[in-house]
Amino acid sequence: MSSSAGMGGDAPDLVCQLDCAQGMVDALTSDAVVEISEHGVVLIVEESGCLQAKVYLKRELFLVYEYTAEGRPRFGLSLGLFVDCLNTFSTPGHAPVIEIRYPGSDMQLLLKTVDSPDACIYAEIRTRIPDTISWDYNFQSTGNVHATFTIRSAVLKEAVDDLEWPGSSIQIVLQPDPPSVILRGEGHGDLQVEFPYYANTDLLIAFQCDHRVSYRYKYKFLRATTSHIPNSVLKDNRGSKVTIGRGGMLKIQHLVSVKRAGGQHSHGDTSGGIQQLSRIAYIEFFVKPEEDEIPVNDT
Amino acid sequence: MKFKAFLTQDGVNLLDKRFLPAVDKLGRICHVYLTPDHAMFLHNLLSGDGMQSVAQFNKDVLFRDYRISSQNAGRIGFAVDVALLHRALRSALTIQAQAPDDTAAIQIKLVKKLPAGSRDPAPFLTFETKGRVSAVVQDVPISKPLPRDDVQQLQSALEAAQDLPQTLVQVQDLAQLQSLVDRLRNVGDLLTVAITQYGDLHLQVSTSLITVGSEFRRLRVLGVRADPPASDGILSAPTRTEMAIRKGEGLSAQVSLKHLAKSLQCHLAKPDCAFYGIAPQGACLTVIFQFFVPGTRLTDKSISFYCRLPVLDPGSGP
Image 1: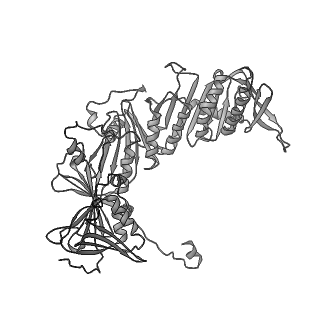
Image 2: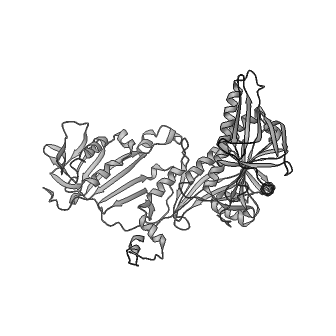
Image 3: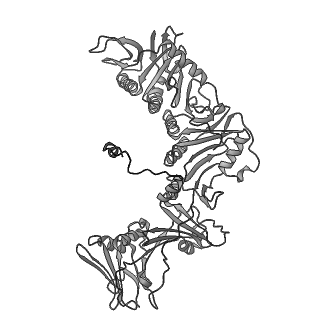
């Protein structure tokens, strides 16, 4: 601006007045949409209208879950603040019980520690009216059966990492004969990763497909579905479920163990198995296919 | 103007292991203020802005054969670089360790010397240590002794600082407070501190998007105390604090989180506990560190160490 003034033009390149700085702050803060229901809490993050991530925290994950609302309240929340906040609450070696409440008097999300009557940390995070979800992620199967496979999470991540080299666009093919999954990248070069179902039962845990299905997906979205999966998922290596739905909608589901620190709240061992199952959170990614692709044999 | 004394062994340990590291963290340059009865390390008492700190010792804790005289009722003040002072003390200690027995004492005195390459004599605080084979003299450069007006101002600032808050609450776990403050620093810099007569300490940082706070309840209270209202346990921490302030049973003040973090560096002096209080009219946040006589639970009255955090905006409530 100073240089343009020096050039002789008195007018700066831009003058604007803002009557609501808060609106600007809101717009610049990346948000997640939180939906609460009698079944639990769902966090939804969307990017570029092409990728949607959902985290399901079932009510069984919580020590206490009291839900009285009608309908399913939704609110927007800065994910970064929420994560920072949860980090502020726990110190190394001490994981307090945190109570989360919604809504506060001004529709805030309220958090506080409740395990000690004489010392507490609390936080109030401002929420917003959520943006309407711009694109419908309704997932429908392509035919009579889902075209789906379950693969070790670490293997999927490795395959997607390898496909970085050709880059840009990745074709995913599921074919029933011979039953196999093919990930193919064509860009700076060609790279094809093939998982034959019968060759190694350790790689593909499950496979279901009654006709050939093929779609292309942007590499950066595909990578987003595996690049940030928690280390515990890779360590447990339970398996990630990949499904291609109607119109090529890709759904990738990871299971995350939500372990209790030191088992301090475990309720006996008779229900150990059920406890273990209910300590799972789901992360789902939905990826839209590239539009120019003509589906092959997709009915 | 004369000053000369021998450091006691306790004094050397206190300064070397505890107080000089703490004082150094509070600010590199401090004022040393010597009176016929006390020796003090002061920060920001003359300038008036920033966090004030006072570490005061009964002269017999640090020294023996304490000789002091001046035109200002036997009071001398000067500024010194704490790191240099600490370095001189440490090397004096090394020499002393080589002595055959504990008799090798460290003597300190104020001198005027001609520094190398200069024609004007400059003031120094000199450490003289006699070891087994050598005697070492170290000169720590100091500022010119403070003029009479400044000494007077220091004295009145100290006397003003004697006014204690009406209510003080005791915080035992300084490490816990420190870790909390470190985490709150990620949120913002303006901290609202509230202290109630029920023994509640409430800290809160707020921005337009988020408010994070912490409350410590039922702390030990010194001074004016009151019984908490019945059934206040169900209220939220901010509401409870607001009610206490409205009833005149609590005070709140806004301070810089940086100042509070700095004051917590005083834990390097290994105090046995700390008290927090807000001065009348919310003038400042006072932190008083308490030391016990070694091996007892009795307060050591010969040492006093406190900080006064300036209030940024006298708030009426959190």
